[in-house]
Length: 293
Image (cartoon, rainbow, N blue to C red; front, side, top):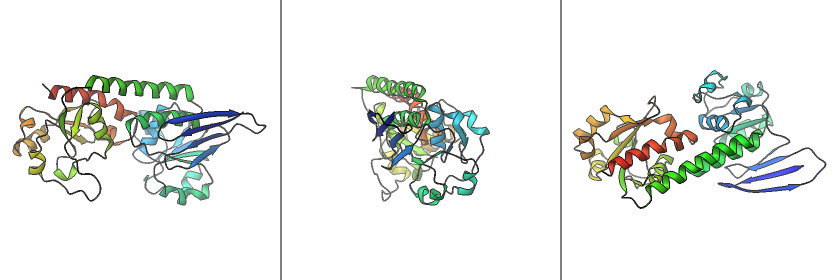
């Protein structure tokens, strides 16, 4: 049996035909390239923290033989061999693990790794729903479709539930930051901004693109955000009041800081295009709901 699986932002089609050859799996990765396997992968390498999380979410953690630095979630990933910086993968080190599939995140990786003659799936989800879709696609590649489909459907259901709960409610102005400085403001291009929209909020930084001007502290305060979320590394799973952030914004005269609506969230969870970003949406939606009162 020969199976073709197609993905373009979401899983699109499955076409089954009969052939004498071994089973083949074909998917389209996020760079538009076809990735072809003779059978589900048995030994895989992850070249980024977010693909590591997607592999585990799809039920393929036992097939993961090595990752790169920074792959620290879930806990099982900590004990896996590390191949160094994700921006400079070493083909010789990877070859020693005899992978039959690699998951990357940059097309620039392709040229340096062609000598390995190993398929590479490029993963760059650009929306919350594409994270769930990616888990299903990973399940196809890893031969873990039932697990992957169940996880993906649960995440889609969460997104639907949160969107329904926020429908028709007053939009809350939110400032997203990576650290306390104004230069760390996150634009609407960031996936965390999609979480804010899902919850019935609006990112106050509307300027997008690399050429967008950096806003000063006074300019940000003038947009009167009702809630400030600051992404910091090492924060727990639930948002907590950011005391340093509260003091910072009190000095700037921000009304939201006077009522303690400055919270820190886990940077690893909200900066990676993985299932934890969707799971982080629920407590963030609760903060936005509280800000409406």
